[in-house]
Amino acid sequence: MKKLLIIAISLFLGNAGIACTTAVISGKHTKDGRPMIWKLRDTDFLKNRMMYFEDGKYHYVGLVNSEDVEGEQVWGGANSTGFSIMNSASFNVNMDDTTSKKDLEGVFMKLALMECATLEDFEQLLNSTAKPMGLASHFGVIDAQGGAAFYEVNNYTYTKFDANNSAEAPNGYILRTNFSFTGKKDIGYGFIRFQTAQDIFYQAESMGQLNYQTVIQDFSRCFKHAVLNKDFRAEFENVPEGQHFINSGDFITRHGSSSAILIEGVKKGEPSNLTTIWTTVGFPNTCITLPVWVGGGNNLPKVLLNNGSGNSPLNEMAMQLKDQCYPIKRSAGYKYLQISKLINSDKTGFVQKIEVAEKSIFYRTEEYLNKWREGNSNEKEITDFYNWLDEFVNRTYFNEFGVQIIK
Image (cartoon, rainbow, N blue to C red; front, side, top):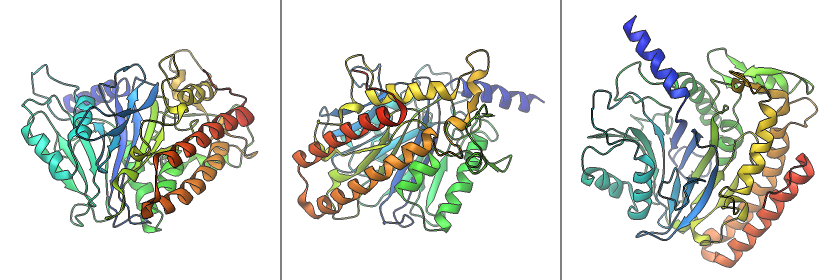
């Protein structure tokens, strides 16, 4: 009974705080041979934006909380060497530790982007950081040499899980939610999300469909429930829009999901600063995903930047649509998703329209990348592409959803 009570308490606390569903994917198992890391971010900080940094040994682009004006913490990003990092919180390590030093994951990831070029550099950073480190996390890392690994980290030690090692990752990927395999057993949360992630990744890998499009559109917008063995997307694609509600609390993407980031690395020999950061700066079910590169310099798409009020315009637009998806505002109403706003038989759902628009972005991005990867990239071309993305996003949200950019 005591053990069950501890689990229940940890689950309750986790739902009120920070959570994530994450993956590290070896390039040996992706469709195009490039490694990837993915983070579906759950947090109390629902407003996110992107920033370009020049304050370290390497330039880098990162996802930040919009209220973090100076970008003191980074929650996923890549630097000019192709080193890329993200994390998910762990709630079953440091449990008997009395130190007050904690919650430094965002600070640590910023430091890693500033200083690291390889997995070995990252390991050296972990080794040299003063203990206790103030960390309870899984860090997913890739580099331009093909490295791809998860690191389960506590205040004093870390354990590496190598996605390129067939003994540790027989299917070429490693998944984490919010419990560590090196932590206390049966403590933490995200167990149902972990099971769902296992199911969808296994199916995609077995069908040769582990690519950035699948992760962005099928995983970051997953409506499957592993315990109930139901696919609500398949069900409601045959139902007209109406007052149809489901409890989204155990979905990979739920009310507390603020953003997502999918970073696709490079093959050996390709320009490392063309590591592609696919960023979804708002609620993934209502936010278009856009690509950015460190090689584009500090001229990121304007819809991803501080719009003067402290938040990014794309996050603001996505939040307006999200508000319609959770219309029950009292008590536990935030759990109940009006799913037909996202998916319906009329194909007017927010997800359905966004994914059509994203296919245009995917197509154009591939055209440019095919050329740039041959060594023909320059900041002006990337900036011109960013300008097109700004216009495309604003036009899509206005024409499809009646939502106008907030300036």
